[in-house]
Length: 137
Image 1 (cartoon, rainbow, N blue to C red):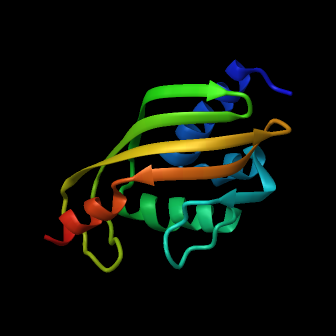
Image 2 (cartoon, rainbow, N blue to C red):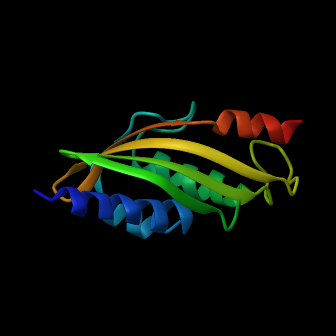
């Protein structure tokens, strides 16, 4: 079993290498084969492939070069929670919305469960829907 600090380090890697740098090979390395995303968007699978699609086929296409700033990281037992801000510029199509050049700020709170030194589950709350609406305006 990993220590709290090791769990937090794994989640930092998830945020920086996977979300920020869109490194899907690292995502595959640090998640279990039966990874579950409990907070998937409608129409996107709640497994590894769905998460890969969201990060590489939606988020990074619309906001290349996005940045993740972790504001808080709290861990207990096998869970790590992060409160973070994802910032970027809308430079690619997003759900049929052509690039606007607008800066975006996505507020996120995630909970990740760690099992056998890998990320097993994800839950998240964010303002992504409101960000998308603001780009339509």
